[in-house]
Length: 628
Image (cartoon, rainbow, N blue to C red; front, side):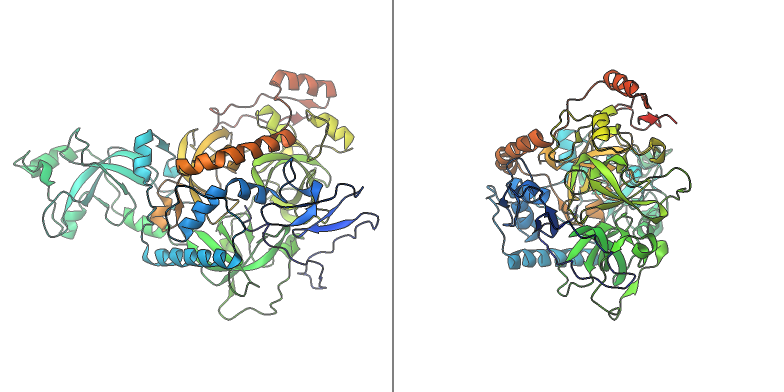
């Protein structure tokens, strides 16, 4: 989620008396050795575990603070990077404009200059494509062929309210007729013919020219929002010729009568469709706007960043102090990670004050009304308190839902959350979630919904049981009624294809599949890659897009990994995955009845059965409910 989290370190010891400076961190006990590891401060009570060196980035740190059972890596990101060498190599190749190699070699420490050069070329390509609105070619990959050859189904555009046309897609479906260029013609000028939608996949449609009946030989895929797609009647009003394809020209002598018969009662695009497409692709964020965004090197705080480019509503933000404009962060304009200037101070969130004393020429603060609004909450009565336990998606390992603790309660319903067992001693990896966030859950959510819960790192009493853990830590569970239980009728189903941001490398948008649905929570799998890279994402996440979004907006799409890359990643990643699972996997899932009996023994909880993957759109209660 935070690209470069492990490649950047920073001295955070300086402080300022300004209201906007980062808040003071309580001094650590002098009896504990303090070791700075990759920008985070760890303490180790007995000092006996020794040090380790990360095999990916070369960082030296406390062995027990390292990731994986073998302690080979300093973080999730480095472990992930090492096990996906072929993925990284293919990504770098694509960034440099080269097709992925047949045999991806192990990626060693790439020289910084080479990385920056590749990324600069990638950014220049994106900016040029954004200006020309040109489709982004992806060597060897076609959504249409991918959908057709595997009989896949794509999530409909209406599932993505934040995407262009997401709220005004209307009745576009199979059978709708449109006027499109006739490519089966020998005339020197551009002519058109009528085609019908045979199949829809996001923005993409499989079209068949009128008159071909059941003949699919000239079927073709195109983006319905493209500039060459028009409603029936457009040619007549624009003075463009309608010419039947050469292959079927002999079939009828009176084509006008044929069309009248075929089109009577048929649907077409709304006359203002192209105007709506254009309007839905106008974005309020502009380059040079200043915002507050999460600091990818210290999750507990925000920094000022400047909008460098806007593509399809996605923002490339460059941190204000980055002189060469390479220290950047990608997110959607509706992301919960960005806020207006002054937001951190208003809620009591930590903030890194910029060394820049005044705004640079041309930079201006983004108006507060542009940012996504959170729901109002009533914290006057029973509310979240520091020390309460809950379950939360780990922002640094989005495939895991972990045991977590509320570390600080901020204003306006915001909470600082720490992942139990892996927190930095200075709290630099606490993460800010709003109380209504769909990424935090009450105690017992994973158990009732048959999701693997990741216990605290180093917790020896397995299988993990919440009641035992609450007693051992002398803590209480956050009340269930405080969590967001709203489940929209989102329309997603298991197996649907889409385009999704790899939040561990947020500049990348990849071919992906919905593999599980738990009410509003989606499990997103990146096609061609190991399951360990899967991400838990909310159904309304602005990081999910319909098939064809990249082509429409001019963004780079990352295709599925080729078979050779899958083979090369399998041995190392499976070995790593096995080691990781031995250390972090929770206990074997108990049945609802078993858990109910345990809960009733505690005389504190009652239990309601959760919904299955197929019961994803209902509003049934799926939490353990605490009795008053």
